[in-house]
Every structure is written in C-alpha cells, then in structure tokens.
Image (cartoon, rainbow, N blue to C red; front, side, top):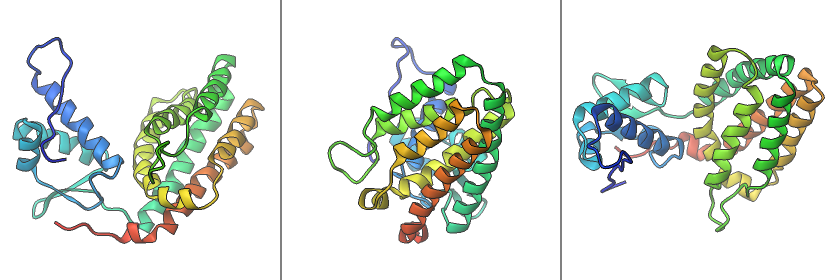
Length: 241
C-alpha cells in the first residue's frame, strides 16, 4: 500500500473534509475485507495520513467509524489495529449471521411480492454467469464475483421490511467477508459447489418454503466456516508490528 493516493471525481473541485474521510474509510474498509491489511495489523495514523495525503483528523475519523463496525480495534496503550480473527469469533459471527439473516430471509419470503421473487432469480442467474475464482488462476476469488455475491445475498433479504435487521445483517456480512477470504486456498483445492448451495436457497425461496430456505442458508454459511477452519494456520497468524 506504499505510495497510494486517493482519487476523487468531483469535476475538479477540491474535496471537502467529509469526502476525504469517506474516501479513506472506503479504502481502509476494502483493504481490511480483502485482507490486504491483515488481522491484528497495527494501523499508524500518521503513516496512513502521509500515504493517503490527507489530514490526521480524516484518518482518525475513518478509523473510528471502522471501530464502530467492528473491523478495527482501538486502545489507549496500543492505538488502532485491524480486528484480529479467531476460531471462537468465526463461530460467533457465523451463528449470529445465521440467526439474523435467517430471520430476515424468513420475513422476506412471507412479505416479498412477485417482483422480489423475480429479482432473486435474476440475481442468481447473474451470479452464476461470473467465475467463482480469479480467471487468471490466482489463488483468490474473482472480485467481480464477490461484488455480485454481495448483491445476491442482499436481494434475498431486502423484502424483510426491517431496516434494523438489514443494518445488523450488513455488519455481520462484512465480518463474515474477512473470514470467507481465508477459505479461498481450501476452496481452490477441495470440492465445493457454491453454485449448488445458492441454487438450493433460491429453489426454496421460489417455493416460498421458509424452513427449507433458512436451512439451506444456514448450511451455506456453515460450509464456509468449515473451509475457513481448514485454513487454521491463517486464523492463528499474528502479523509483525
């Protein structure tokens, strides 16, 4: 990340404080979720400000917002650092996501109209059209697939009628995303049919079988957790200061 500069598209106008903070926030969020910034890694405010050519205040505000999202931790003695990962936290995040997202899916099935059902099927087809892993053969997920995967899962629950549920679900999704990235080496080398997992969810949704849909969703999340656990060394890695 050395030498990175943030870019802005505002017709040549000088970016204001809020724009700067938002740009720093989104870059740091992306680097955390993609594990370019490793779990437990120290985040030096002055270094980040210099790297992004922004003020110390912009970096501190961005980091504080990431603390609120659970992606960064802060202490008086040790400053900011990327939130660590652990097997216990993985299990907690996964089970809580099953509880929250399962409830949102159940409500969506109860309340969603024909347009919502059509959108679920449409997003599933769009997701299937994108390769799961990087087309260049690298040991990583295809970024286009990741973006579409986020949209697919959000579409599954966006008819639930509760902004609170959707907000909690979004926080848990981001926490899960870090862990899912750790499952990639195992997913590449061992058999996993993610498309079939998604199809099982969609088929149950289309039948409006809430119990089957929630069970399929839970199995999908638990499978990801199992693959992350197979990459146990990464869960225990503590990057150098």
